[in-house]
Length: 38
Picture (cartoon, one colour):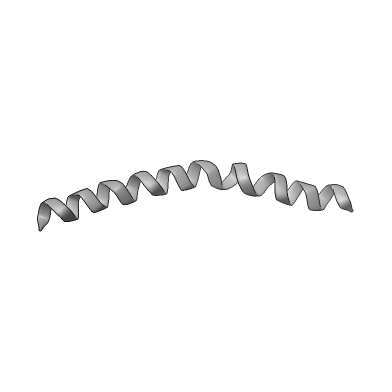
């Protein structure tokens, strides 16, 4: 049980790091496109 919980925490942390890395890459261009349209 503890081994599975540990694996889930590591996997979740890895996914959150990838999400944190790609969030600005995906959302900054979208926000800038709206600024350019104005």
